[in-house]
View 1 (cartoon, rainbow, N blue to C red):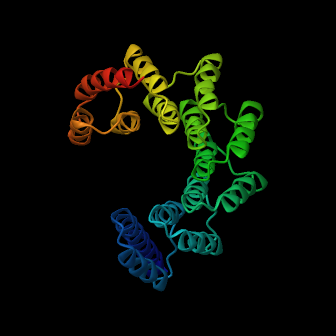
View 2: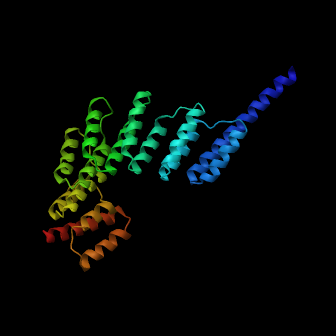
View 3: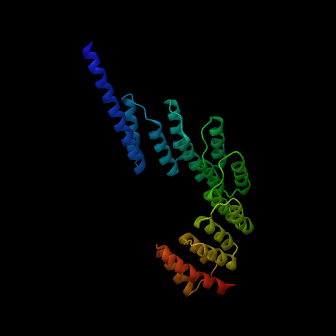
Length: 276
């Protein structure tokens, strides 16, 4: 009897150590993108009668989804549920993101609705992930409908929400819609960031509105925001090819310093004004 009492905790401790080691190993493989190694560890874990936990499954699903292997990520979700592990908000967000990147927006939307049916918490990240999916196909209608829901029953839109929305308008070359985002943010008392202004600058650049791009860049500088490479590349699209513009493009591509970007931005504004 005493022997049994001694052996049981020993076996339990051994099982827990194996489980912890296997889970840590799988997570490490997943983060490194070594899915063969993760699969081997997963099979070994199961052969010992051990099951991955929610964190492990979520890590594998996220890694697969980010790699573009969304179907494998969805199969992992099925395996997860068969093992009695319920996907959490992070798991669902990873799947919605993967489907969005694959432009499978209808499927992403179905998962979003399924979360509600299963009473899984839909955070601001969940809503923004679906908004991002809509941006991949430039679907302004569904994006605006989702923002309307956020203003009603969901978490209130944040800077990222409006920045994504501005990028959708930019994709559709809708300058008025993109610029109106700033007014909407002001009304909601939400501060725009570099990504918001970049999306609006891109909208102007897509229709070769040099004055509009210059105006957006000036607004950024007035707010103390340093443009990034994406912002400046969008602005340079409006400038005719020449020795000076080519030199600026080269500097933009090589530069990484925010201070340098500000100087380049001022130079680009001068060139844009000359183009008007």
